[in-house]
Image 1 (cartoon, one colour):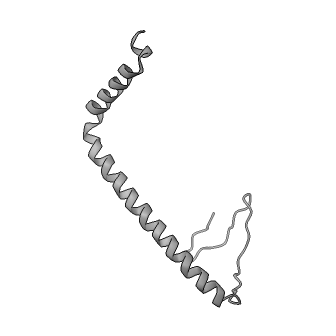
Image 2 (tube, helix red, strand yellow):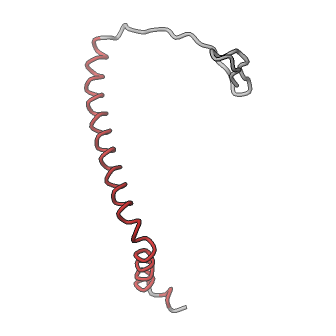
Image 3 (cartoon, helix red, strand yellow):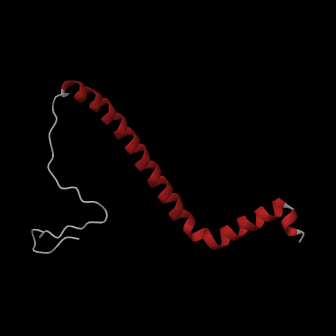
Amino acid sequence: MQIFRNPVILLVLILLAFLLFGANKLPKMARNLGQSMRILKSEVKEMKTDEKDGKNKKSSSDGDVEAVEGTVISNGETSTQESPKGQTSN
């Protein structure tokens, strides 16, 4: 076929199909992209401040280690102990 040999015609057809069938979804996609970018920027900023605070706190509290009690359950085993609400946990 002659259509698939010329990439410009193929790109125009794809663009035309996208505009016809996806025109009502473009604003939603742009809004979601902007919201995702804002979330990403705020998370990166928060990570940078946490990293700065973490370095300061680590140097002052090296000896503060607390032990945690618990039971190790492998993948094949299940616990049959009663939960607080009286249901068994699996």
